[in-house]
Length: 178
Image 1 (cartoon, rainbow, N blue to C red):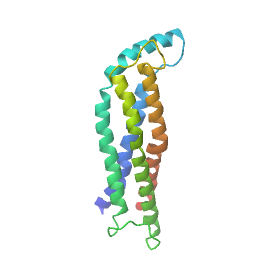
Image 2: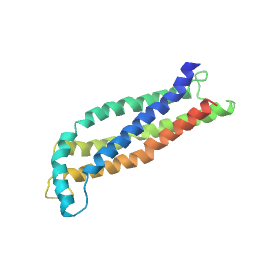
Image 3: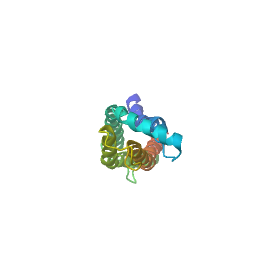
Image 4: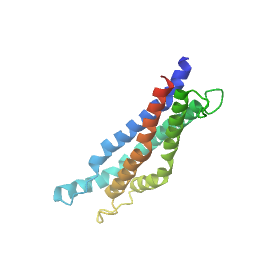
């Protein structure tokens, strides 16, 4: 019984870790992205352009988090779908709460998978910053601009995939344990 309770909460816990990582990325990187044309902001931007490539080592650790938390969420959501006699519990014959829980586990799984298509574009921007391909002379092509674009992708991905998956896993957990 405790094992089933742990299984039912595992996607939620893993998605919580993913969300916290996303929020942390935004919290700590956004202050380095200066977009105002004022002289003090432009000076800060020049410094950020030099600092950002060295900070890109976090992406290796970040990928470890992403490639751990998302597969755990996806696998445990799939396990929750199939935990009733090895069948997906979405049929009309299934009890109401487990059927609703299964629907939300499925939705959470889909939203978790939706995180992945954003990866190639995001990684391209991070690699450009890591390789220090930006130029200080062009505010639209410097490292800060690449990070601002990455933050936009990260925010959109969080709103479209990460937060909805977390909400689905939360509702699924509540129905699975009621």
